[in-house]
Image (spheres, rainbow, N blue to C red):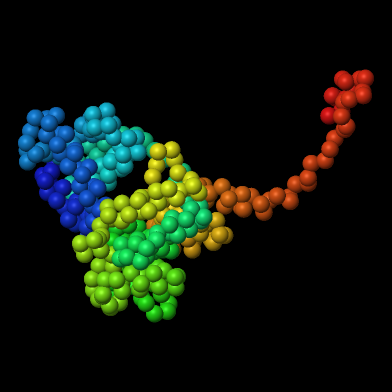
Length: 337
């Protein structure tokens, strides 16, 4: 019998493990919270218990299997979402084993459940001409137009995530050479992103319309009411500005341009330009080089460039034999092919 109660395990998992040990970003923790919340509700309904009556003995392999099937069949979750939520539960179960060794037998049965690997479609991105068309399509000298121009320039220049630029303040921008933007990335790690002079100039022009200085600890981007832009607001701006300017895009059918499309485009263009993957990984803030490798897989130009080095290894094909017209012995001609 387990010596720790279920509620204590949940509390410790979020407060100590995810937040302190793993230093996960808030949005990642919220994603884990949603999965555990769904599991708690499922167990309570299936076992006919209240949430505070659930014990670790209720978290069995059979229950987890039924829960995963419920996600896909009952809630209509995609295979990708099911796999992501299954991975979260595996992390949760492994952590419980650290708290209570008596849970090991149950945990082994849960961890033996096959984790479906989901191979998603290639990452969507926009060609350089498409990026130029989107930003060039922003016209006008009013505050919102200048804001959108500076925002999209930062997204493409740095490849930062929407949440990272949404949390940025004015004093996070270095307006003297070397220009850069400091953001807090995944794992609460500070990341400094170099900025082009044109990007800094666009930010300065935008800030002048707000009558603020470049040293203030205030939001870098705000909405029409002067409130900090959220990542959802940034997503809306990107989709609205990109509408009608995505002729040079490589998106799956039915997909729209989002902030992450800009991020993918930055990475693809860096790889396409011949930069080594380690440098691209550092710029993009990828934890593993395998994530950066996906952009080589995505971009056909980069693949062709890599294969070009082997082009001259084998000799060029030579013509063998002539045409068959005028030859009476067609069988002999075929043998000589």
